[in-house]
Image (cartoon, rainbow, N blue to C red; front, side):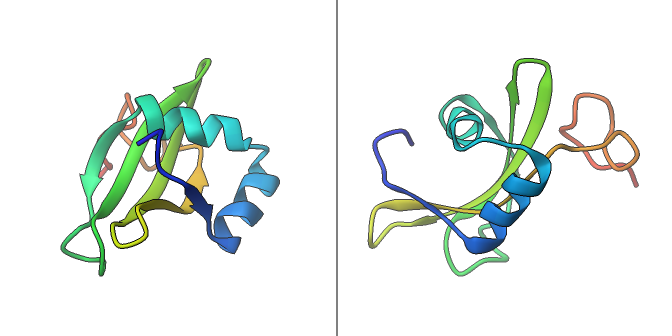
Length: 94
């Protein structure tokens, strides 16, 4: 994933600013994170939810792949909360 151009949707940039999440942190998640939910059936392109860490801080990145342009598109970024996620932040609470 690290060789593709990265495109940030306006929503992602706004949320990153509000949540104090750097572009470098997002890149780290995309390069070394784990795909925990596949949204390919729900989106026009392959994509999903990735989990990674920046130090001790867990981060979720919703992304999609634009295969035609060979780029990754970041849709949103957030720090998952235990109120919505099970410990480890890989599974949602029911």
